[in-house]
Image (cartoon, rainbow, N blue to C red; front, side):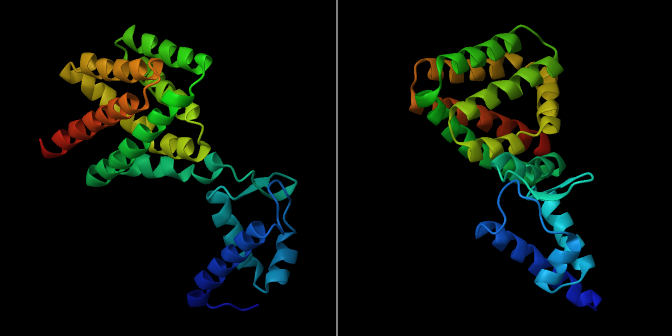
Length: 233
């Protein structure tokens, strides 16, 4: 089938939408192998090159996965697979766009922490406490960073909403947070951020959703203010 260059993007987009519709309608199920590229292109009435581009785009988005020597499969379609690109956005964002991402994180982090205060298990609470203790026991930014990420990841998991946890994971750029911790070290601000983490932990221990919401919002809000000062300073 002959497709001119101006048409090709449109044809590829149409193929993407058709494959997504097949998944939505249950024609293709999570974990199912797709027909061959040739057969699927014939079925949808497009060229193999457009089909190849559509498959490549859906693979990048986490909808499809290529298994060497086996073919193309629909992924599990779990939130973590589909929202993985959030991490790329967070890593590459700079300046005002990064402030916007922090604003989104503040809203979601405070909500997740409030939910966690009501739902967290004793085992999860113990893990949060362990990461807090580890953060307090070192001044090494890399060690603090690892436990900081784990501290918030455990809380997000305890909230019981996998989609929210996946979005927060994407927004929690390791690259950016490493810059924050190095900056805090330079400014002697470790004590302040340790107090913020301790306040979150106390609210979880008390199983107080509103206190947890406020503590998490204040914590991310401090990071926002730190970044704004860096941008305007």
